[in-house]
Image (cartoon, rainbow, N blue to C red; front, side, top):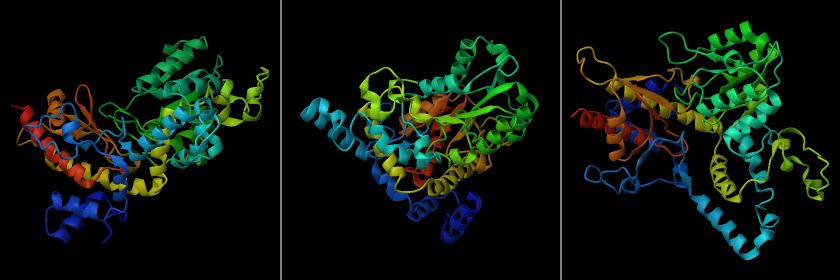
Length: 434
């Protein structure tokens, strides 16, 4: 039986449990799923810290020699093993050849990022010529909005989430002010319905239809950082462009997480990770101050990327290239579904035990509306729970006042990781209530 055959995670877990003669919550189910996971070998490409290496760990509570439970890939992924090798190669080249490293070797520093743009394009569903690796996220947001946000007296609003990632919110405010408009009037903020945590696609499309004539730009995240909601980027792009709006996405939490098709969807711009480096490479060094801008996204380049940043990115993208986003997504649906199943089993609200802490999952239950992250909202303040988890070798992400973001990454996380996390969370909840 192939447990990754496309049935719902709940059905898969029950079938495996029946096959094994155990409960779906048994560790045996996790072991079976890991044994049949065709992507499990990818974990070997990464360095997984030992519990003893994590600063908050309390070795009186756990075995420090065990691998940690790393579920915070939405903030920082594990280090690919090849990253060190590539960095050492460039340090050695610098030591031996000095300035010649700019144009020599397998990754010349002057255009090293160009060599991995095709790998990046595969991850986000774009053509290589539509991808440029440069700068940081906020810088890229500003650069893109400088070109794509062209407000007029009648069409000057930017549509974004009410709880957008702060860098996005601040960048939008800044760009609106830069063009002489008032953020109070030009920022159109999408709010979930009363009593709901996430935005309904129908509501987003309705706002675009009703307000579209006054919207210059739709600028949403691909995956909402707090709730983990995956937006329907295809439908939003089509609706926005039909009303004459420019449509862009911050895909920082979506790239490498969900299966993206940015080219097919016709997205105007997206960023996740005009200057001199936008000049055509063949004539760039003539220095005649007559700009020959490269076509498309390459014209946004400000400078060559630091080689010490290119190396770990190359190492990461090469691991992605060993599989496909379709295969990763297939595993991710079951991995995240397994986390959801166990969370609901152990931590749902129980009217018979009103004093027992419980957990609500605020990420959409529909797998097509989420990536690999579940946001767990606790009935109690979670700072102590988070500390108890960290003492026991869990790396996850806390958002005040009551949310833990748990992100099992299909590249390197196992089903055993998820099972261990749930058991550790049970212990942490008990310890935090003492």
